Image 1 (cartoon, each protein chain N blue to C red):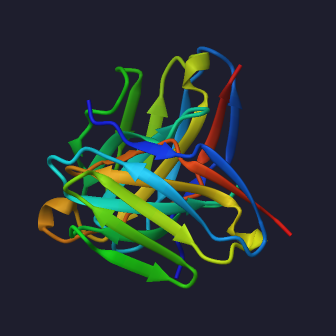
Image 2: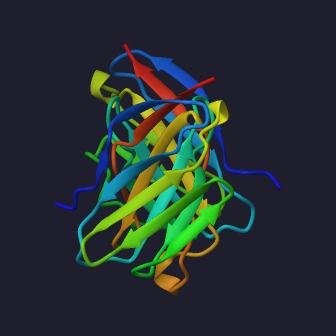
Length: 110
Length: 118
């Protein structure tokens, strides 16, 4: 059974703080690792699709790294803002379907 | 352009009833996916369509669940004899091509249908 673990489960930070989350996934049969941001009552928004070991991607204040050999990815948010409050999901792709973790719920206070 | 849309946004039904959930993918996307998110869990894969055919239905929990995509665009997820355990958010996603084509495809999600079975 393929298992994707995310930590922490939830996180509360102050505006301006930088933070990071972890996604652990199987290191075999790797195809891609996806990150999504899901705000309440909205569609999950695709942030990154990462495929290569050592890959780093950036989108504004958000960046992600990938280590396929040890099976983990980090998502970083620099200078958190209240609008960053959401659940961040990572998903492992070994074939067609995405296998999601349970997500990290971030709350940013102003 | 328009994203993935799903209707209804919320559905309340009684145990034993039949429900249909609709997904309109992004125009031109050949691949379509259904996922289900139960409370406290991440989304779980149900079924994947490439064009009109269900290429992978290994995630459907039992034979009460069925999905169609007759013209290769809109898809309907059908649940017969609903049970309280079917209560969840049903998510639809589409991608331009299937993973098997070799491209690293982003799956674009709709806002989901929140199903509550009483």
